[in-house]
Length: 351
Image 1 (tube, one colour):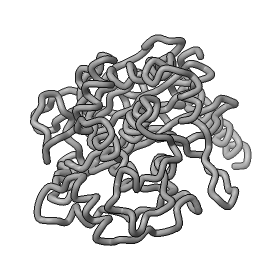
Image 2 (cartoon, one colour):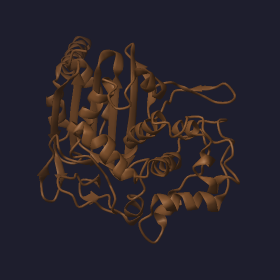
Image 3 (tube, helix red, strand yellow):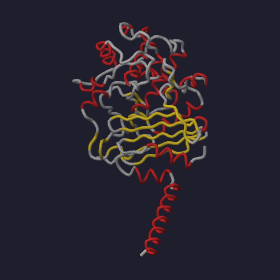
Image 4 (spheres, one colour):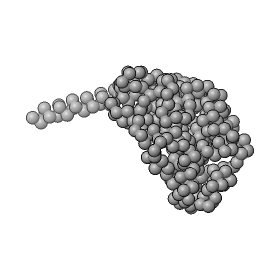
């Protein structure tokens, strides 16, 4: 009995070792084919050494129509949008419209009674203290950024003194979109499309201006394989932009990463370094968030990343600037392990 038990244990151990080695050597493409066979589906791109080395789609953009996902399928970026909003703000700063430490009341005089001391930098790094706007999602119809501004005026308070805390804020990035509008004379969608997307060749990327976009090749979002995530509260908040509402593709986001690597959007490495600098509270506490980027390290490499999640969409843009390596993962369902995709890509592609 003892010998038989030992043989069984050895056999099981060998099996686990074989499975472990197999999992480690499985290619990124094989892993994605196995993982994203239906809903959620995914589009993935990998950038290494200044080139796009991988891009493909898996699963369905529309489960009912069986529309397949490809590298040009459009997904809602959700909070990955924040790095694009931050870039628009940086472009306006470089154009001399303001400084990062300019008081926002210069551009939002309606906040003068309660937001003294809040700066553009506070908005960028989630230290301004503006209350959440999500109650607008339960309103009678689609909300706009002007409604966010009006709600803040109605509340007439901050949750904490600017600079004293780091607290993730969607409201702050919606106000940054309004800042871009008030200092450029363009709407936020027009600014991004004219100043960023078109010049960079991001031809399938756009800002959602409607409650539900009707453009082609858009991945529907799903809570489950049979339940689209298009509830009234989602529809009502789809038209608020800055914190989200940019739709893009795996290919276009690969282009975005290539231009970030070359510092060709703002124009200088010094300008971009500001975006990747950890923040500090007035009390001296450091937090690892720049301008639309979470900052960390992985396997000895600097890592600049941001995830997004909204109504069934789950997204990730993950950059390793010193290694000249980046991974984009866009999904339309709730069960995706985005980090596992990055791990597979790191294992497979030289950097």
